[in-house]
Image 1 (tube, rainbow, N blue to C red):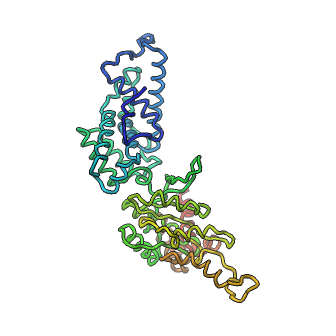
Image 2: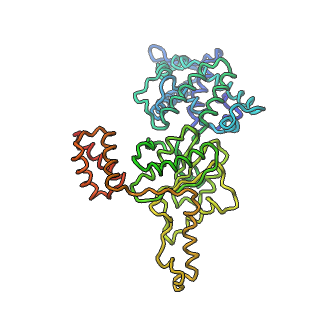
Length: 454
């Protein structure tokens, strides 16, 4: 059946929009006083309907829609009026000329806002239509439950709590909007404050390919809630990282960063901490691996005009001498004809300072039996690391520093143990678990937490 949704100009072609069209169609028909062919089942189960087949098709569509709304509530942790939450979710995720302009400038002058208001008038009508007629038509109370839904689990899996709550607040504002103008202002405010679509509503992303082989940026749903303060020690290293990222987020000049040093010293944790600190100020992270470097230009093309600051994150970066993927990275960082956009930086972590494995023979300029231009070979391999303007060293702590990390982590985790015994056990643990590193200390504390709480 055709509906007013087909008259929308900007807000069209939603992902997974079957629920929208099924329920919207029923709502418009059953709220129309002229529609009288729907008569629910009588007391004896006798069906009074002009077209029995269409009745059962519509009934099936209704319950299919109810099931989808409940699944959505489980995924996102929504409560209250799930139909309103669903409509709001569609609107905040829809990337179009209006929504993307609003995330940058707020209210947009000109005809585009008038076209958006046309679409919002249709959605406001969907917010205002009564769900009770559906329960009457199909002799059920499911609609009542959907409009005042109490969720068994409000944590959700798709958003952090802050975004989920803000979408819930927006849903309520849209439901109580007195007119289309108020509805439009609420949407503009959300787009400007929080952004639109996956890039606005999620922190971190990975790179994948769709069924047609096109590069797509996919949200990472579960992010470790690591804070920079959780990383004990490394104050100078963290300070350099914070200063560079602060400049970047504020729109000032900033450098690509290489965090290098021994394994388990907190390089990756520092990046996660940076994300969690600056996410609310528009920072996003896209994780990539070296086999994906050929997709770097396409990824950059998709994000360069968005109102966010992006860090392309390369974890545990290193290359064997036969791997050439680093050439893609060099061209993107610095050296290609196209200027890297100002809203993108590259942060990498590595156990190697120079990123590419070197042979001793590379350093012997006269070793012409191996490479007639060995000094050029050395420079070629060093040139990638040199393209990172900020290089931050994370070294393994000394014994006293390691013991201090253990003390702090034990206190944070509520472990009650005499200090002498705690440090003695920690030193025994490190002998067989990778030496003096922050990771080793955390693993030791996790071990104690598990054994002491049996």
